[in-house]
Image 1 (cartoon, rainbow, N blue to C red):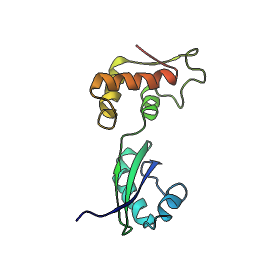
Image 2: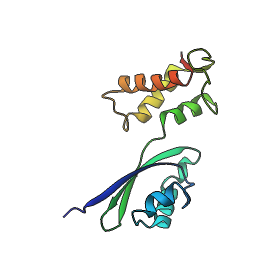
Image 3: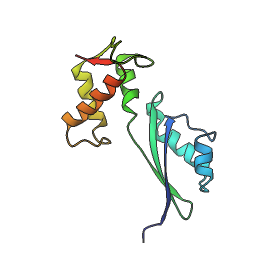
Amino acid sequence: MAKKIKTIIKLQIPAGQANPAPPVGPALGQHGVNIMQFVKEYNERTAKQVGSIIPVEITVYVDRSYTFITKTPPTSDLLKKAIGAEKGSGTPGRDNILVLSKSKLREIAEMKAKDANAGDIEAAERAVAGTARSMGIRIE
């Protein structure tokens, strides 16, 4: 018989750098989850992606056990890495000084396609392009 789900917790944690401090500790502690065990497992699973922020979805069961799945980094994080900038434009639409190539856009869309709410790669590309536009990144 399947375990009964108590709650689902969604967090965005730096890869390989989770610790029991907020937001991880309080989010898991209030549901009785072993925080140190989660931190150790998360850091092991995301050690290869250090430097990225990795969303994680933790399913907590009534017996205080848990399972978790990691997702792809946020689109904005991937775009910043692709263009080599620390942040997007302060005034998107006016100062579009940052440029992203179509090939990089496609690469990011393919990476995000499995987690995205898009039916095909073209739809995922449009979603990534929209995020880029809102960050002041021009697509060429």
